[in-house]
Image (cartoon, rainbow, N blue to C red; front, side):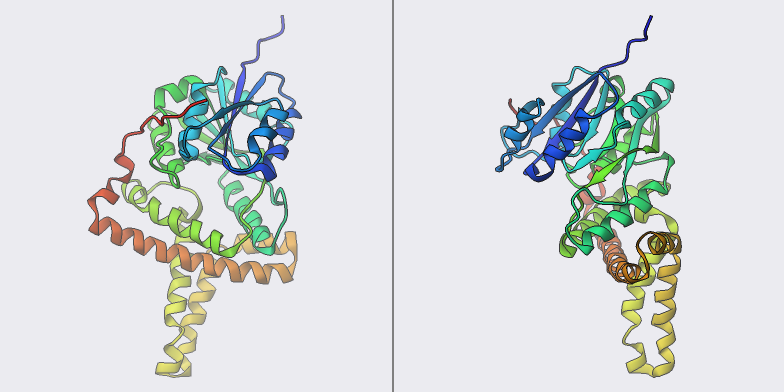
Length: 342
């Protein structure tokens, strides 16, 4: 007799992503796994997202007000019937066998609480050089963490519904850092694994100002958790990348030294710049192989700005921790249920 496969509820939070939502839902229609329900939680979009979702046959839940992605994911769970919950952002199109891989991993190992995925090196809709930078940078950083991790990647993760009920909902107060807090909670009871077979093409940000702003706010907001749990892994929390960000910032601060103290001091900012690059040399080599020398030079310049931004954010977050007890308690906030309607 054929073994019964669990129903998978794919929960897609969406806010004004009509441009990519159709691609996201089309990719779900092509999944090799046969037992899927798709729930689009529309967070009061002002574009035609709801119409697109309904045209693809998804069940649509519309929030009463704009509540943010974490609360939208929680609301989707309230309407889900599946034994496996698959959370997927609406700007991401999965490879065809992803849901099947996720189910196989979760059903084979009861100690596994969450399985996360990564991004392909090519963006879903290529718009700019900045977007190509972001696509390659995120692909390298996330894919390189394959194995057991302590965070979740909230754009692309799956878990058993019983684990969600046990761990509790995502914290809707943490719109920019819910992944860190939720990963911290999950790993008190279960393992989290990143598997590179769980993958998809993502429509990354295509403007430098937006990319730098997200790096700054996310790095700053993660500081209270990093101080509480130094072993927290991923992205700039990686020790070598952290030192690379600091080296980039100090290279900028040391840049005036040759003009003030003499040409011999040019060695200081150059050495710091070299140290910043060396901290993530594997990434630059990957980009050189994948995209060629010319783009690698552009990539290096943009990533230098990113490193400086992250370092400034770390100091800003540390200062905020010293000055604000409320900020220090960011990850002590209770997960609240969001009110929403259909």
